[in-house]
Amino acid sequence: MIIKLEERISNMIAAGEVVTRPANALKEVIENALDAKATKINIDLLGNGLKQIKVIDNGQGMDELNLKRAFSRHATSKIKTEYDLGHILTLGFRGEAIPAIAAVSKLTIKSKPKNKVGSMVVYEGGKFISQEKAALNEGTEVIISELFYNVPARLKFIKNPETELSHLIEVCEEFMLSYPKVSFKLTHEGRTLRQSFGDGDYETLFEHIFGTSTSKNMLKIKEKIHDIEIEAYLGSPDITRARRNNIYLFLNGRTINNFVLTNAVVEGYHTRLMVNRYPIGVVKIKLDTSFVDVNVHPQKREVKISNEYVLASLIRTTIRNKFKTEKKEFTDSLESYKQISGFEYVIEDLSLEYEKEAEKPFYEESEKLPYLEYIGQFAGTYLLLQNELGLYLIDQHAAAERIRYEYYYEKLGQKPQIKPLLFPLDFEFRPTQEAIINKHLEDFNEIGLKLEASGPQSFYLTEMPIWLADDDAYLFTENIIEALFKYGKIDLKDLRDNLSKSIACKGAIKANEPLSKEEINQLIFDLRKTKNPYYCPHGRPVILFFSHQKIERLFKRIV
Image (cartoon, rainbow, N blue to C red; front, side):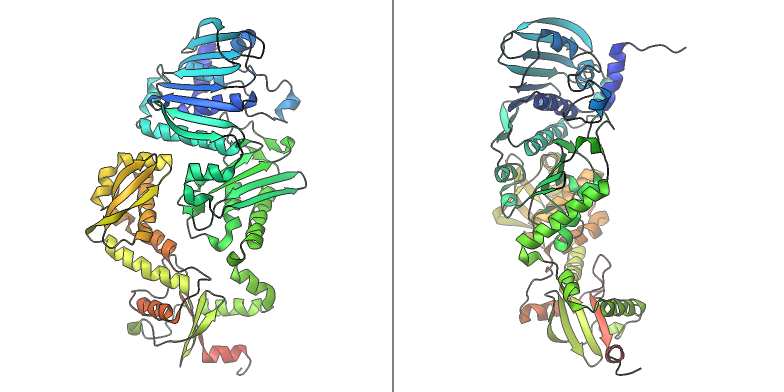
């Protein structure tokens, strides 16, 4: 027997897609405030958002009749016709958020338009309770209390309230970055967590959200190509993260998740990023609404874009060209070499010949590395060495990676010896990272990392393993956090390889980094002592070898 469900049950089903956690509810309410032209939005949280979320804005407000209609499913002021659905200019349009939130909470909305009397509507668990007059300033006040109180199954999935707070903070940060000319203030239990002043200053925003170091050397891009506008604020390649979630994409003001476009941003940095490291950046795109379909998922983060790969190519090329013009020192040496040499086929032939003979060692295995005489440096990256057998090229970055990898791999297999720090190291983390640290402080202590809170999202590192260098301490800590995020526990034996690779890559000598004769000699000396000096931890060759016979054959001296 097929029956028509009650509207309250339908709204609870819709809430399962629209409101999966407190952060989703906050996102929907802020979007409504921005659609109402608000320039000031205050957010007050209690109990990590589960007890109460209050959002007050100075937008256009709603009169008594429209306020009551807002609780009806698929009731909206933002679209009216089929044409509007294909040309959406607002953040909201489905008319599902308010009834969905009302179905799983105790929801009160007060609103007052200009030159009219304010009113208030109260719903509990999807049931209408009351409507009456209310005194308030022009704008809207939304109070979401006891979220999921009537859906115990949903509450079971919320195991860590502190994690929910971190997601709420990240939602607020997204809107602060997307709407820099809107003033935001976020408080929790009366304590201010985030605040922006609506002055449009991205350097201040970056410093406030990501830390002081990220606002330095920021790359700014503003391009208009045909009908596409790209505005980007990108952090330095030296400051990276282990995950892509610090790359923010905004399409026509809307936060979106799009792997192709995010990957285009990463590729725009080209060889300036270490392996498996990702930059911090904000990319704002303005595109004709007829080329964008946002009616894909109730949460409106997934969108379909016409000619998505064309847009990705444009983003990648724009970022890459900007780096070349603004940061001369980062110009990719290989591209420059290809443009001026005219002998690319020779390079390809050499590479192919090396690959064919790679399985045959060009010296005795017992020697590891033969005697080598340093003769120069090529392209600021490759060391040229020779002996009686022929010519050797050593990739200085790959060599340093191999040395550091074996060092850390050995140390991570030993019981850590701890050293106290005379001057503690001060680290800043993201809200989600802070939540993981607070939950696993004992686990950090067990591996020799003693962290003490020094402020919001800030920690002092007061003790660490004796073998860990100060410059590698933050990266090591961040990798441990990432492991805890994925697996919920730390097992250094299992993480040993990945941790060693990550630390080795980050701190290794870079391409285009000038080295003194003493540093080169030390690098070769340390490389000799490694167990495998032939390949870096990621499988790339450290050494290329060209015999006298091979070189003479290439120059047609012998046939």
